[in-house]
Length: 310
Image (cartoon, rainbow, N blue to C red; front, side, top):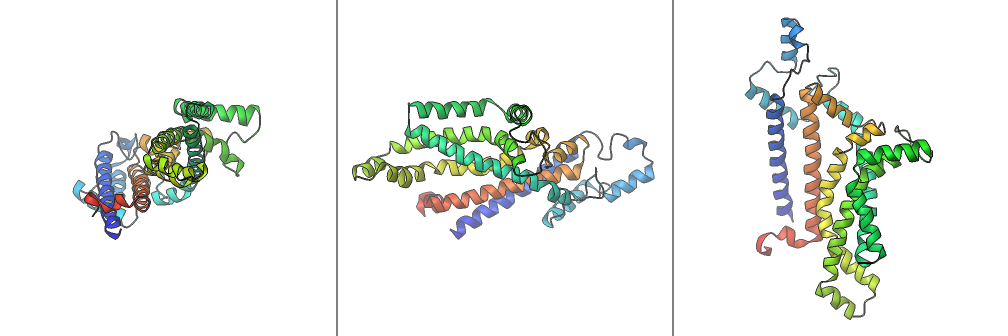
């Protein structure tokens, strides 16, 4: 298990280095000027001072080495848009809201998605199956940027059941979390249903039933445990996708998250903000996948044993 973890850790570090390098290259090839649209009107002395302040006066290879060194030390630089603030400070301020929204959404998605998938499989070709899959189809068909305004208007404004926007208390989290989780519920429900149906047809399930075990025991101890393995492998990427996909929902419900900073940084060519947020989100994705691999290795020992089971 230790070798398995070390191998995955090395892969994670190499992946993060590659992403950081590609980000640096792409960032340097963005059109426009990081000093703003009116950069050419800035006096040369002032422009040279700003370029020196951000290290843009150095050769590209030196900028790249400084860039990597800063990342290693957890320094993502100062924002071009907000020179008095470092990117790390902006992340610390805004990310908790995005993270909270993402965690609530993924919790709703896992509970609802797995429940619908299990019901659909156990009630195969019956009313429960059709109902669960109808909800799943709706989840795939209606994107968050459509569902969000509908929830905000009808439930928030017209009926006044829950707050239509802002980020003040627990009740303000419900509508954006539902809007963000709806598509994920559909993905998990369909995957769990397919996996459950496959497991239910396996010989060991028939053997367990022939031994006189109750249906509940067979479902809980044998079926769900094995059917959930494919779901575990995608929960990590889905979690990061939910965390990084809060942009539209944040805008609709006025959530003070990182989404607005990411968009504004692209429009303004804020190199440090673009690279900082990209690397930050990539690091989260890599970390979650790493943890998912470890969890999967514990759940299914064959994964960590490698080729030939050695």
